[in-house]
Image 1 (cartoon, one colour):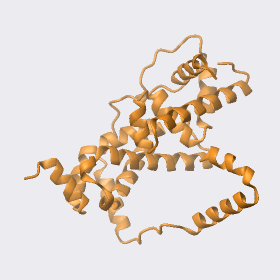
Image 2: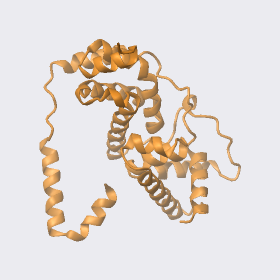
Image 3: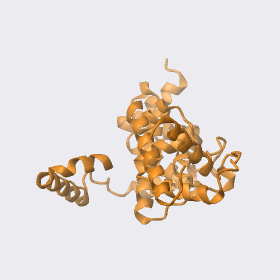
Image 4: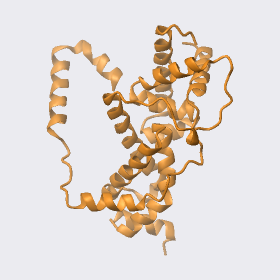
Length: 181
Length: 79
């Protein structure tokens, strides 16, 4: 006799709609939070949560129940968020500000002026999306590199390299603006 | 860029872009919107694996690599 969770996962893998609904309710918050961490835009995160679950629904046959749902859903959500970042980059509509209600309180360093923070955020928004995602998750959100690697479908070494390249490009951009970090 | 530089850049980035609150939630239940999305797409044909644009892009890349092998590192950098 299968336990409830593995039964739902197996049913979903076979295309059962009610199993999908159960998984949606169980994981929508986690998927939303993951996407919000990448996009930093609550409205876009809601739309992308729907998009990610739509992709999940259509990919049910490729799902492997033994590997669990959360990591698989996170990878699909990351790809959906990456596609969004690429589109926004193309449209040149990158937002550097995040609504106060979703930003954690961080004690501001008095040596870092508001202007430097804004220029840093804008320079960060100009980074290639793949580098930006890695740096967002590993540096800003301080998530374990293993989790970041799994979500991006790359090795931990590749995450470290992308973070290094992101920081180097960011530094160069700031130096061009006369800011020496 | 040495480790000290990296640490400085990380701290600056964290000052500029604070992390997301870990208890952030969507404004409401997203299931009704999910249902609308599923209903809207249920009659639509599945997207093709390769759109014409993907094919054109791949052809362009192959041509670029064939005529200018020096561009390979640049392409790999932006992958």
